[in-house]
Image (tube, rainbow, N blue to C red; front, side, top):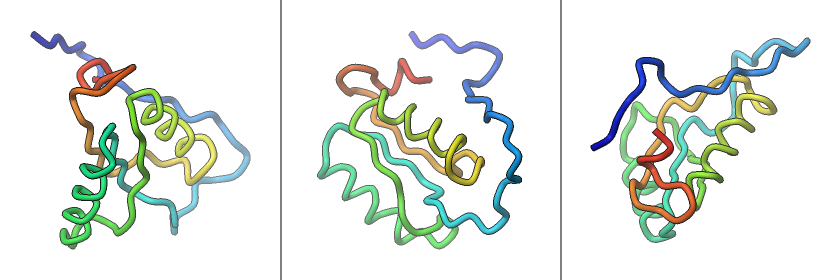
Length: 99
């Protein structure tokens, strides 16, 4: 059984003197999976959905995924990913533990 807290998991972006970019050129999707074939397949499927921006960042486990999310909030455009696909069964930190 998966338990959920009342508050969603999030990273707080560090305050910066530079405002967030309005025309963000960063990837807006993140795929977290330990199987490269799955990542490529999901990326191909996402490319066919018109409402999802092209391009996706990739991570091979939950720890890398969390690092990618934090990096995007701190270094890139200071906006969270719009779309994240997470494998539930991965080594180190799996998708269930991430939630």
